[in-house]
Image (cartoon, rainbow, N blue to C red; front, top):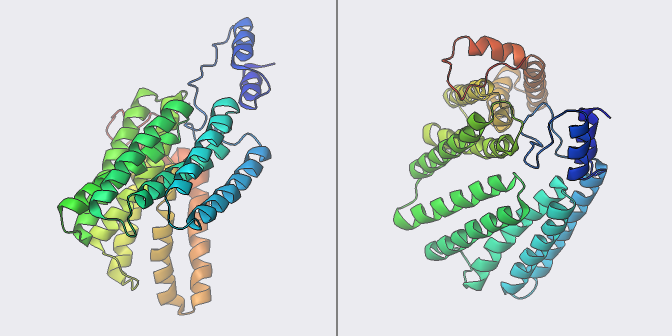
Amino acid sequence: MTPAQIRSALTAGIISQQQANDMLLKQGAAPLSEDAAVIGNEDEMRFIRGFSDIFIAIGMVILLIGMLVFSAAMGGSGIPFLAAAGISFLLAEYFGRKKRQHLPTLVTAIGFMFFIIIGVSVMMGMDRFSSSGNIVAAVISVAAMFLFYYRIKLPFCMALIAYSLVYLGFSIIATAFDVNLTLIGVFLFLSGIAIVWWALKYDVKDPDRMTRYADNAFWLHLVSAPLIIHGLVVLFIGVTDDLSSTTAFATLGIVLMVGLFGLAIDRRAFLTSSLVYAGMAIGYFMYKVSLDPTLAIAFTLLLLGSAVVFLGAGWDTARAGLLKVLPKWKIFRPKQV
């Protein structure tokens, strides 16, 4: 077996970590660390090992929805929600620690976080989230997600920790200040900047994207981009269902800025969150041109889809051109040969 085949066999669970290391050593190759990246290199994603993972994840979603409905039907007690959180944690222990199946474990992690938040909130007698109760629920959710990461040690937990920290931060701000759109926009933007800085710290440590640092960065970028974009949109455009030419151009400008940054740091995940806003802006212009909603939707999807396809196909070429005009900072990953 080649080193690549050995790594694939390990990822698929066919051989153990020790067997893989022994086989690699016999071939003179470097052992595969338990900290090796699974998803950090977006060109070689191994997050899903097969349809079995998808099948189990679908079942997990159904199970979690069932537990949510059952808990809600138990007369307003928080205990069923916390029990559901405990079940989610046990499922994560099995699928995360023993089976190392990432997708099913991700589903259970999301369920665990929400059950903790809802359970604590209900236990405190909050029909609606009070400010102080929100902070307590947020603190407990942050602690729970750190515990989850400590036990499971899968990188997507970083995203859930980041979300819980944002929840905590907003709870504190909502308690201390009168919440308005400007405050929300500033908070979302600064939260996104803080998380992308966190992600870039991992990226700089692992420019080749071969270790768990790259995986951590991937998930943090996935969280940070929507916060940055939505924060900027709220700050400069506001919350409105009625777009104008000015707001549409402003939205496209924000999307372009975020897209260029994602291209510069070589993170396609950073661009995915901008597609909805890009679609809204393009759809506005298409509607103004065609005046037919159906044609506007069709042209929007055609233009947006074509842009994504061409950018994906020419990513390396476009990035090489962009790197020529950027400073040689560590956050801008060098072109890979």
